[in-house]
Length: 276
Image (cartoon, rainbow, N blue to C red; front, side, top):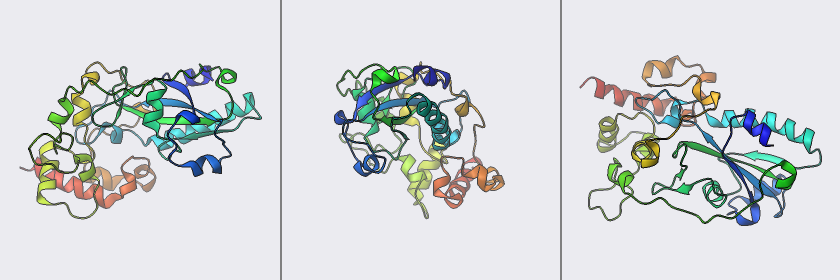
């Protein structure tokens, strides 16, 4: 398994028994034939490329990681079934049976930031999480045995809370609070004047990376070695680009789940900023 992950440029991974995890969707385990004696290999997928986006989050500038995970699973399943024909395996990402951030923390892969994101020393918080659930023991897979780690949090320097455009992280701060800007950009329907103004002020069509960018761990964070996230990166989103995308191209983007109307609305708001 180590060799397979190395070939895929996946370097941050660790085994954790399901008995140590927070199970949040047990039916996914039952549906796939797993019992409480199974375990998971947590994997982190760094996604920040050298192409810095201008008006959308880094995660939205790269192609949808769900598509990457599907391709990864196709190769991984073939490899594992050849090596362990009697084993049961299933790769999960996002729609997961366990609390992925918690599992990554107790397996020693990172710690939780004030913004709730998993932070790693090598890639900061610019990582996607996924896990291979299996009933095959880690030793048989060539993976290190589980050594429980405490759930750690960041040093609470306060930079993310201070820089947050909507001031949604600091309960002690008397300034007005609103929803996270990232959540605002994803809302359906018409935005309020204040919400639109926040988008304009921060130049964001989709998402918000302010808390990630000011984090001390981002200063020396490395870029992704995974080629999928370095290819076909969008650095600036506008109405013309959205309208020119075929359905196939559009649905390969992380923001596509909200539909074109929401993205076009945001692009039109952003156009106002450029015409000021």
